[in-house]
Amino acid sequence: MAEQDEARPDVVLGAIPSRGDKALYRQARARTIAANARLLATCLTTTDVADRLGIPVERVRKMLRRRELVATKVGGRWLALPAQFEGSSLVPNIAVVARAMPPDLPLLAAANWLSLRHSDLEEADRTVSPLDWLRLGGDPDVAAALARDL
Image 1 (tube, one colour):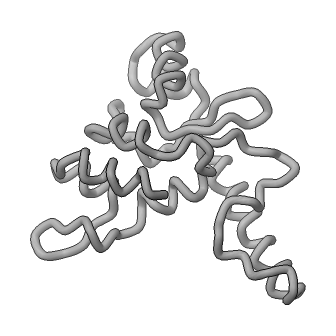
Image 2 (image 1 turned 180 degrees about the vertical axis):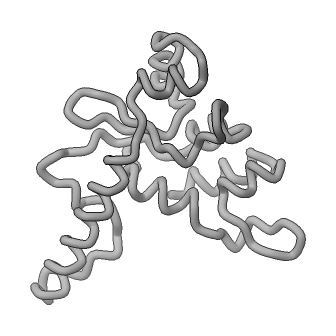
């Protein structure tokens, strides 16, 4: 994931109107900044991840280097997306999808994509989110192929 620029956390979604409509742009920017701040406040540090998974911090750092976690760097420290965890473990095969995501994808965009239903992911005649797809045992390569297009 992209390192979050603390001065520009609004640059996370493509849904911001053009600056031509200044009022709409300011509202959308404020909503995006607030959403990004809420998300970052819930994220897990490397120590938090190590404690949750019951592994050494060095192993977490290795996972981050290998892009096996959905995470971003803010102010020089890693913050991991909490939605990729189920209790004391990771969502099955999240590493496959995390590695497929563009490295410069903002964390808020990744979080939204992972949690929203995707028309190409169907389980029992209903569309599911990429996270639910993985939880239900869906083929991680299918979700990874979608992630590459982000």
